[in-house]
Length: 434
Image (cartoon, rainbow, N blue to C red; front, side):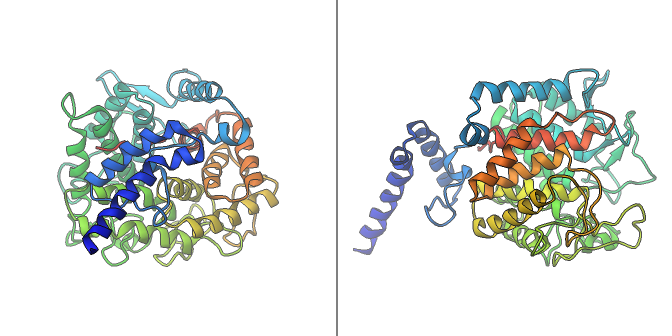
């Protein structure tokens, strides 16, 4: 009798997953949900309605928020994405993507005049999302040729900063883990979208990085990228920097995918998404919703002794990405929806109360300075996925739609966050499964 009951519930679950969109009036989503359901089952991942919610990972449905909330047509949003691609990857006056003579390419930090794993990995993610395989391959070849450490204590990691000739800047520059995080995930997506049979085995290379970043025991001064006790991604896996984190490096949605697809350390990776969610919740100020650039593993703002150029305890540069990370996790997985709605409501009401004037603050909202940037407009619009207040959501979406595409000397970081955000809110930032 018990077996029959389990059998019946199993098939009720399938029927609900297949026909829920019909009940909601959207027949076009049925086959996307069906295909996603069976892929999840093959990977041993729960599809239960009401447990993790029907996020895009489970349904295969990626909403275009401009269309849904502002009535902007699909054609208009498609044209906007094409315009942004041309701006950053094609037009000489505004691009940050440059090709070299050796069939490689790089994303150029136009403000600091260097090349960073952050930008290279963002560029790769943009390319795989927009089906730009040739550009993706050129970027990845540049990374492997110039940034990958093949020997020494940093072997398996990537130097975070190079000049345009490919020389590592500094005697032995460390890694910046957000770069590795986007490298791994974009390579998995490339494997699943394009296959591994031709010029590059993307899946094997993703697995290799995932293995390498957990192969350091600290005996020669370099540690695993994730702290084994806190299960959190570290600021830099070396010295005292291994004992702190950057809240914006915490990408629970990515870590969910690693846990599903990894060939190594599976038990460990399964603990990292919730650890990242908890860190983001702790790092979000209880009144303002703001995040610090750097924090302890308990989410408290942190200023390293060696850092003299600015106060990393403030919401300034890195921290703008936290809203994008939370919004992505909300609409992909929905596993921490209630907390994420509270966090994003606080944060987005705070910026509205400031009339979208400033971009830098102390954690408690005092000490306002700088300007509300296009990158912030994008990241916050992704955070708006988690809002229950539709009017506030529309306001952030309209602001993003109306804001100019970043240009000028400092268009690189601002522009890459803006472009990633535009992919999210138009339904063009997708999970590609095996």
